[in-house]
Length: 206
Length: 245
Ligand SMILES: [Fe+2]
Image (cartoon, rainbow over all chains, first blue to last red; front, side, top):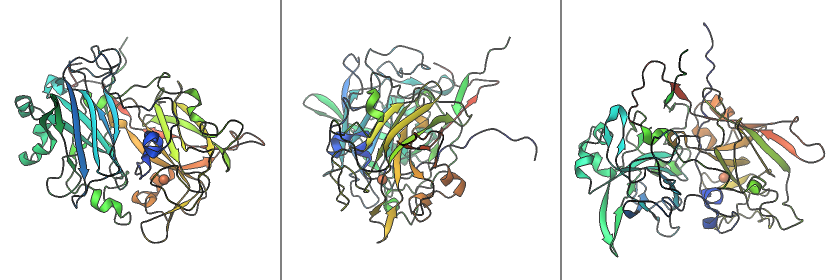
């Protein structure tokens, strides 16, 4: 048999279940307990760059909105820097780039306010188009789903993005592009996520 | 002198160890599971980095579920327990200063949630959530009551084993994990369609907290030990292709 390798196995995932709000967004579950809930202010007060709103709905295979979903978002600032000690560069004071949102219990709509991220240097120095990393958990989702949101108005950068180009089926790349519109002078990006079936969103094993 | 190897990408997640997206016996997964294969991505800065939390984000008392919702001088009903352990990575190294969040039903199996309508009574002194940061050695602890089992709509007579939901961050977004903690000796574990989404019994074992008499406080609180393992990172022994930043 030879020598034994001393690695551990990762703890296996389990669904977040329908009551994820109690732990991660208790206000939405219907009670106040913490001084501050985490993840509602993604960019902070000093963030440079274009303020944007991102909205969408998560749909199941029947086309019905998933109403007990929780999403987390992770993004770089407008300069393409992540607020993390291993990423070289500075972020604005108060910029975390991480957000946590839940859906409306009636409609399944979710949304968050942030700033548009800048392009980020990827592997081998290749530039990645501006994107927001998303992680989706809900009842019925056994392992959190990872996807990326890219921006419609970054067509040139998207066309050169090494991650988008990994997706062999060109038609599926469209599932990662958020559509831009304006509301009250503010840009709003629409990003609907289809868990299964026609137009199934591309999910990544990261 | 050689420079120590820099940590590189996370080890590939073992998708045969985790539950598959689709498990017929857990009915809700049928319409919510992607049918097309995941696109495998070599880690970039977007996956290796992740949010950082500090002591300003939380209150030190947030990890005490016996107190964090109870009226002054009162406490929740149920078996008083400590849940403690370490957050490690696959290299068996501690993950310090990482956020651990939990939520659970009360001793009668009822959640404090506007969508939970189970017959089990709400406890006016129990909220059901807590959070903490691991210390420099990756240790964490919570004090709470043992949650009750509860029925759920799947097959007509399905019951969840007593469990605590656990959410952990690590240092990179690729480590993000939500799981559930079960208790040693519970006969409902083996019958649970959610537990059984996990194919390998050795993986299920990782989710069962052991009673820990050495950490138990005599005449006060029974302890359970529950270690959590997040993905580890490879050492870039020869090359570091992750360029730029
Ligand atoms: Fe639960």
